[in-house]
Image 1 (cartoon, rainbow, N blue to C red):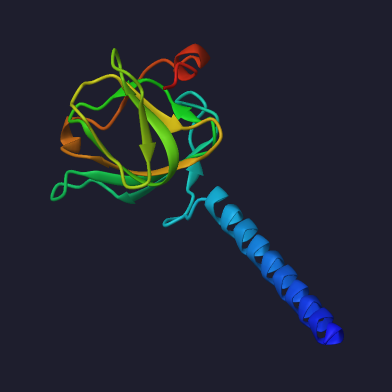
Image 2 (image 1 turned 135 degrees about the vertical axis):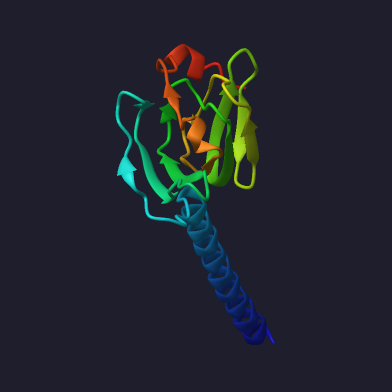
Length: 166
């Protein structure tokens, strides 16, 4: 009777150890997956330093023409990267496709952005957007009525402004 109890205890311990190890591996893989962003579109070209702090990559997806006077593209901001202050003569719509980031209209509190968020920035409104300090952000941008202009770049967002996060 004692031998059977010892065997059952040993088998139970081995099963519990295997279950614990497999759960630990799944958790680690899930953590790794969430740390990396899922790229829907190619990363694109690095944005110019005169318009961005840190590394931001842009790829145009829909070029404006006389029929569709709308520009659409994808921007990936590495952690800590952000745009300069800027305006759009006809406004801008941002569709956050992955990661975590920020958007701020001048004079208003900073908005925290996550996958699935939509931002509508009114025409001729100073604003900036970019990634959080520890996680990148990927967004689609839509600029309508491009015959009015696409973007008017201004000065960089200072570190003090960026660190004034919620």
